[in-house]
Image (cartoon, rainbow, N blue to C red; front, side, top):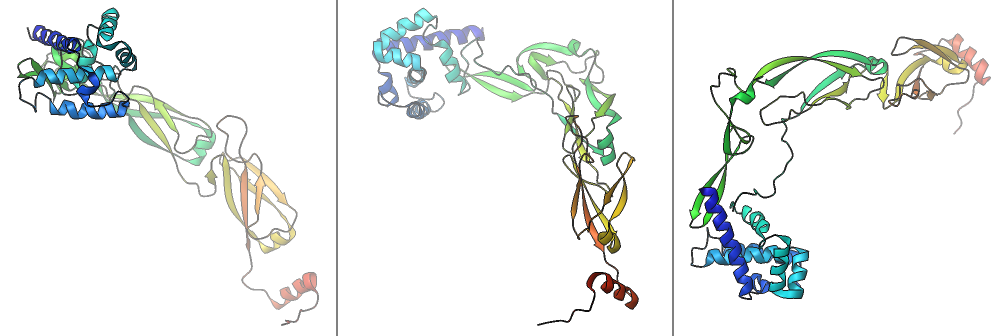
Length: 373
């Protein structure tokens, strides 16, 4: 009965628009804009006129009809094709075009325009987003040592989530007022010929046209129950802090929703020897003065416990940086390794004996040098 009444009102409003065409109402004059008005100017004028003659605000006789005329004029002038036809062939040409197109006076436009103000004039439902709603994604930090990121690793993780009752579909009933999960739309007649939609929050609505039946025997614990699942997390060699490992659609389940994703986010733990920046590794090595002057060979134990050595034959200055190619982190591409950079700090002795000083002078400087101004 309500749907029939709405369809009748829709037809009447469309008839009003067509009658306005027959009566030679100029759409530009109706909105109060020039024939060269831009889309922005037309929208601004429509907004002002529609508020002026909105049935909720204007109770004068004829306001509702004026409101319908303004809406139809706006629909035509904001559609480039319709506007060109109107400008070239007038109202009669536009009417013929709409009849050939099967639009019957722009019914679709009425749905879109009136839905702005909470009105609905019949069955089509207007344009609505078809994208399925999702439960929130879950992010969990995964703390990994530098050794684990160097070698790669496999970790078994337990994840607790809410999962749908097995028989949840048996606990739903038809409810046309449900327009989606948690959304209920109630129609209210606010004036003769006008029906307004009022959106309400109702957690019993689980999807479009479906409502949850409370105290349903098929699901005695409710819509969802707690479930513990086992996940295997694969850590690829060379992964970096901040990277994500995603398990799709394993977050909480909920009737009417698609499950969100679970993301494990790599958090790198510091190392006592190595410092990382991307694929490069850095260490600081302290050497005694004698090694800095005469050269040395050092052995390093890497993150995977393998040992390698390197030799320096020349004098090493304090804070000198040496690069060892291919001794860094594994590259994510699987093509080789980054580099290792070693910064040397020279350890000077706290004091020297007179004999040691004399020996150094003899080797390096010969005679004592006098201070000169």
